[in-house]
Image (cartoon, rainbow over all chains, first blue to last red):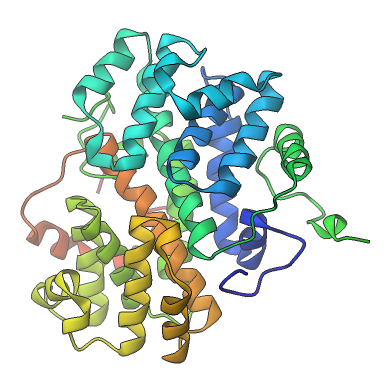
Length: 187
Length: 183
């Protein structure tokens, strides 16, 4: 049970973002810019960064949610599973491997990011903007994962929940739905 | 030297913020909502202290000095008291409620999963409200982001701590929205 009273029909992050909407607004906007805004990284690639960081923070809700979003965007399920197990052997480009390695270092701590890790990404063609966005996406998910688990929000066990969430994240992105979330209440 | 060419030589988070205004805007709006908005039963000093403590635990020199100086400014104390709180909040004269909230923040710094039900119960027994517990967790989580942004890009930080103390009154007055990153 969550540590604070949250709406029962909104598990995971959504109930928290509805609990305090004035702080949720910039968090949503930041996520929308980073994961859906103009970028030379695809939306699927950016969801993989979120997936790897959430997985390493052992945040079950965020890992399942962003795995689902990545799967919907990539039209397959193999890649998201592979990057969680071993970045080095995952079926992604060498540039993406280097960026995912940077994200994994950010997850462990900002100071863990080494010049060698940055040089490796640049050698594979990563731009400064891609490295900037990778670091900030990874840092943002260190916020989300702690917010979700630090207040003990509910993690649904039904896989179809995340399938629906993944579709919503593809179709609507990270902005608050214009009419809120009352339609998700069980009838 | 920063890991990427930021196109400016601003210290700390101001470097990447000037580099990327699209993300700077919500990052600053979040700081304003969490740390400075007056619709909150935690004082600005309390909230800056939570940010300072987490930044200290994350070993982020720039953030712990910016926010430590702001806490010192709001609390009208000196930096040695802020340093004592960072080193061991329990050994200071802070309120028991703030000690309980800082303990929660310290757990969040490690991982969301480190926060225990008994820590929450203790804070509540000492008078912490649901909203104060929520804000403590979110401020601590937010600093786990800001600290990683600052250090993950290897930004530089002035080493003279007086630099931060001198800037605190102005940042307190201007807030986090719409300030000039170059001043």
